[in-house]
Amino acid sequence: MPPAPCTPDADAIDCAIIGAGPAGLTAAIYLARFHLEIRMFDCGSSRAAMIPRTHNHAGFPGGITGPDLLARMHRQARDYGATCEAATVTAIERDGDDFIVRTDRSTLRTRTVLLATGVVNHRPAGLDDALHDTALTRGLLRYCPICDGYEVTDRRVGVIGTGDHGMREALFLRGYSSDVTLIAPDTDHELDDACRAALDDAGIRRVDGPCGDYRIDGDRFVVRTAEGDLAFHSVYPALGSHIRSELAIAAGARASEDGCLEVDDHQRTSVPGLFAAGDVVKGLDQISHAMGEAGVAATTIRNLLAERRPIRR
Ligand SMILES: Cc1cc2nc3c(=O)[nH]c(=O)nc-3n(C[C@H](O)[C@H](O)[C@H](O)COP(=O)(O)OP(=O)(O)OC[C@H]3O[C@@H](n4cnc5c(N)ncnc54)[C@H](O)[C@@H]3O)c2cc1C
Image 1 (cartoon, rainbow, N blue to C red):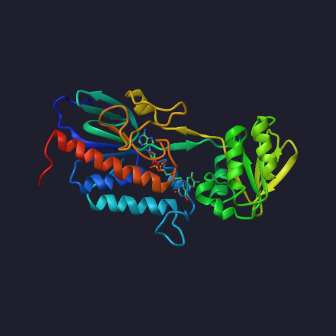
Image 2: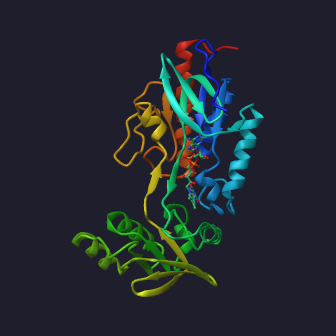
Image 3: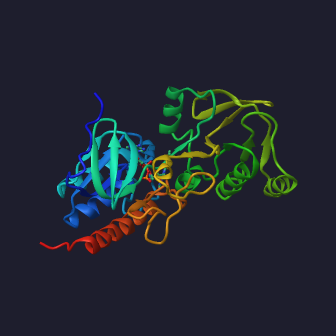
């Protein structure tokens, strides 16, 4: 059934939050506690849900799994009346001072929008979903050296990537292990002289691609390379990400070349009333950062709404 039309005289809500990861949920908790009328939408693909157990998120000695953290945040948001609707937002359109937000099942008018849609990591080509998920759960495959590099201290580490990005990830991981190998994903490595010199200086081994035929062997993740099978305690794909900023860009928001939304110190995009927080904005791509940005965005949204009409009990 097509989504219902949005009547022009329908009452606008205060804020539509798109995405219920750490950023969107933090904003929901703040905005609900500001006594504002909000709606939150999520299509069920938070990067945080993929975290087997985070050990760098402050306040949780012993760590916490991503799904548990999200469940706690949903519970906290619900305590203040903010619920999450399972829906994919398909468009944000400016309409006068308001926005029309369209989902796959409804349409609504809102005074402000917070986009907290995150990013999707590119996975190694040919790695099937079941093997990917098992390897991720067991820490054989990892995506975030800042998050969990500590866990691979003095282990045998592979990095799938090349160029400047692959080099930087391998050098970062060299801070945790002396046994780091950079594997080119597709063909021979594409590295300029400076990259090669930096890798050589750090003692990082380089292996040409293509890589594939992934398998788990005991406590190792095995990668077939141009030099044969190599087994690692952990492998980090360094293949970049897809930034889920299309909705905001289509609404006119400025973004960097790679798609990260540009925001000011208050998380305002270049479209008045449209805010962004979390991984979709250029930043640290960490839970703490997403939460901090969402707190700033929510408070700025509250103050912007108060300029349009007094917020009083
Ligand atoms: C394997 C792994 C381990 C990690 N470990 C750590 C760690 O230990 N510590 C740490 O700080 N960080 C870690 N991270 C990073 C952390 O997960 C992210 O920084 C964090 O989840 C960002 O939060 P976010 O809310 O911006 O985005 P996300 O958590 O990705 O949430 C975005 C949400 O937007 C929704 N969405 C997207 N598009 C739409 C749409 N059109 N309509 C409706 N909903 C939509 C998605 O369903 C998703 O729920 C890890 C990441 C990975 C992949």
